[in-house]
Each structure stands twice: as C-alpha cells, then as structure tokens.
Image: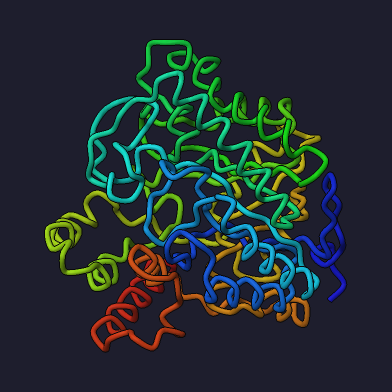
Length: 414
C-alpha cells in the first residue's frame, strides 16, 4: 500500500515507522498493579501486527491515582518488567508509549488507600464514594509524582509519554466547571482552572522534554450540558502547545458523567454485571437496574470525533494533532490524514485483531471486524479487556446478548 499512513513520522526525539498508534485503552492486565505476561503478550502482538507505536494504558503516577485493581502503578520496582516489554516492542519494529495519569475522584479507599482526591469535595456515584478536595500540599505532591513517573518511564525505555488530561480524570476535573467548584486560585475562571494542568505540564516538560515525545490526551468537549465545550477547550489546547506538548490527542467525554460519549455504542450492562464478583452484589444490582439510565446509548458511527477535531485543526495550524475515535479501515485513516492530522490512534480494532495494521497495509479497503458491542469494555471492569470473539469463558447467554446488541447497531446505522 502506497499511502501517507505508512510513511515515517518524526516528533521530537521520536520517529515512528508509520502513522498508526494503539491508543491508551485500559487493558486490565496488571495484577497487583504490575506488568503481567498478558500485558506483554498483547502489546508485543500489536507491535508485530504493524502498528507504529503502541501505548500501555493508564499508569497511575501514584497510588492515590489508581481507579482499578488491575491497573499499573508507576514505581521503581516495576521498571525492570516494563523494560522487558519496551525491548520486546522495539524488537518488533514499533515504538512504545505509556499513558500517565491520576483518576482523581474516580476511585475507592480500598483501591487507592485513602479517601479519593479530586478538584473539589463531594460524592462520586461512579465509585460510589465521598471525595476529598485537594489542598495545596496535595496538589504539589501529585505534580511531583507526574515528574517522577516520567523519569521511571524513561528508565523503562519508553519512547513517549501520554499525559491524560481528558475523560474526567484529575486534570480534566480541575479544568471542567462541572467538577471544579473551588474558590481559590485553582477554581473559577478558565485561567485558574488551568493552573493545575500548567503545573503538571511544567514538571513533565522539565523532566522529559527531548528525552521522550510528550503527548497529551484531552477532550474536544465533555459531552454533556454543564461541561466544557469546544471554544474553551481550544484555549486549553493552545495553552498545552505553549507549555511544550509535542502533540495533542483529541478525544472527548467524561467517564463519570458521559461514558458512552467517550466510547460510543451501548453501555454493556449484562457483561459488566456478569463479571463483577458476587461480594459486590449491591453494585451489580445497581448497574443492572440503572446502568442504561446513567450511561445512555450514544450511537457509534465512523470517525465520530472528526467534526470537533477539525475545529482544533483549524485553530492550531502548527500543532501536531493525533486523531482518535471510530477508525475502522484504511480508508478512514486516509480521510483523517488528508484532513491534516499527523497520526491516528485506534483501540477496539486492535483488540479484535492485533494484525489490523498489517492487513490495512495489504488492502486499503480492509475493514475492522469489530462489531462495537462493547463487550470488551464490560469485561475490563473486572477482568482483562478482551473481544468476545477471543474469550474462552463467554457464556451462551452473553453471546446471545452480544448478537442482540450487534443487530441493534445494524438497525441504528441503516
């Protein structure tokens, strides 16, 4: 295939063999908050499948930033195993990135070891739990943790870091007026709400600039009334460029308020409930009864973030931008690149088939076999993220539910 998609691209100290990136979709493959054989096998398979760079997803910069039990926590003791992973990815010809973040209010004491911290105090139904608004000392501690996490990523051989500033995680919680109700220098005006992000970015750039490429994942809009919208987030993007980000990954949505705006499709209630442990019977009941009310369906369509992303492309003509959202084929990739974006991220297509990029290289018309039923997302809350086509433990009832969702998707798209 002769295509811009399969041309090298250089970004700071990073040079990738093509423009494709496995996006930072949470794998759920880190028992005891450490790398596992399944994490190693999955990312090396994606690298072998032709991707330019694969991103290890959500690594908490400190323990208070953990939101799931099977999630990476950046600390010295896991660096040797991460180095084995990056060495294996490099041996397949791909580059390695790691997403660094803090979940803020989306955690629970039994996971993060403390009352969850956020931009403001309150109650988070997502966990559910009470949330402690961070004081200045805690803010500075978390900022330092970001810098230390970047140091560890460099030691582990990563070529890039992706700072998570979207989806309602901690940086996003400070940015959005929906979650930031502070009355000090970190709340109120956009200038104040960007202050935490600014401190994090200055620390990340101080530690990592020139050593790793610095990506920032951010929202194009929060996806609900009362959240941030495109014009304000364009100002955030301009500030990130000024602060030294090498590229921006343009996403959207708020996991605790508009989760399906992030992922699109149906909220996979039955899969979530099936894989939850019985000791959480009360939570299982709540998800079964109210899951589709708090997370209503947002129909999937190809390139679903492109319309908003193009507004950022126009407003930041000199900033490298990475598109993510609804990429299903080589033709989709060509459309995105022709629209002025430098790289393309994808997740579900590479979960359904780790050889997806190689198949696009062989045939521009090749389309992902992902059916967008979101079974993989339902499973990841309790076990590892996996496509239903590859799960040995899927029950006949769950398989029937997957097919019902698939048929509903087909009907919506007619």
